[in-house]
Length: 342
Image (cartoon, rainbow, N blue to C red; front, top):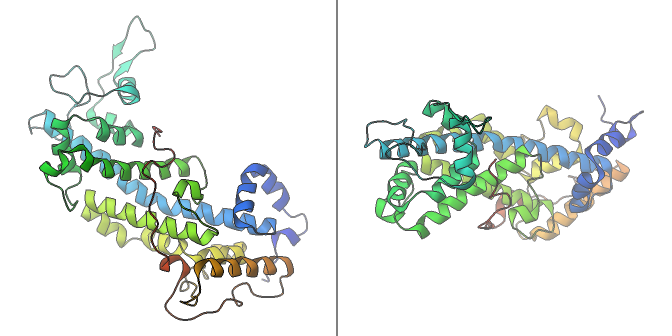
């Protein structure tokens, strides 16, 4: 079947589809990409959706492993080592972790029925049920709120594979803070994905980029950082993830080749053929910004005329890829969304 752009089909769904997604939302993509056609904007929107989905398995492993490890560590601490699933969060117990603010309020919602202020009923859910119903934001806040006498034990237990995971190291708050920020970065990305916000925006990634290839590189760096965090929590889960379909698919999607495949023909990406080919190769000596500009120009020409190949105009040589060759970009210490309890 010959490819026909959505914009050229009879009764094209494209205008109404973009209008339904809303002009302000779509304009954010259009302005960033500097592409000339609605179809190209939709193509990048579809890549962004796929990229968000590709992050989810990794985030899921981190969130579940983190909460279970924190629960286990605090249970052991407050039960004198007799239980790995105790009610350490219950402020009525003899030994408990002092919680405050929204974190305490969320726990109390699970422990008490307060629908009648004159008759508050204790629900006594099991510790496992409480743990399963607390949001990711609660766990990152607990790491921040725990007392100094708890912190050394908890961090050593939760991050056993960290290169400096000793109780003496974790007894200092300035040593714990970078790890808490790393957890909150995972939380921030999780929140953007759950709220259907673009994950490629420069202000979220805390980078300065002139082209989408910079965002691709930053997202790849973020994926590497998350995998390292998972390794610190559970090297076994990291090994499983690194040999999974999810890891393989993340690497294929988080590349310039994948973006260009979507931009060239988003209707074909469902077949996976172009995305699974080796990543797009470019000249080593060609500056990244120059390459990015030429790439966008080629795609614009293809979208308008459909008479030349957007990829064929790019010079190629073995061993170099835009998305994997650029230097790593540092992330903000306080990423957008880190205060959320989602």
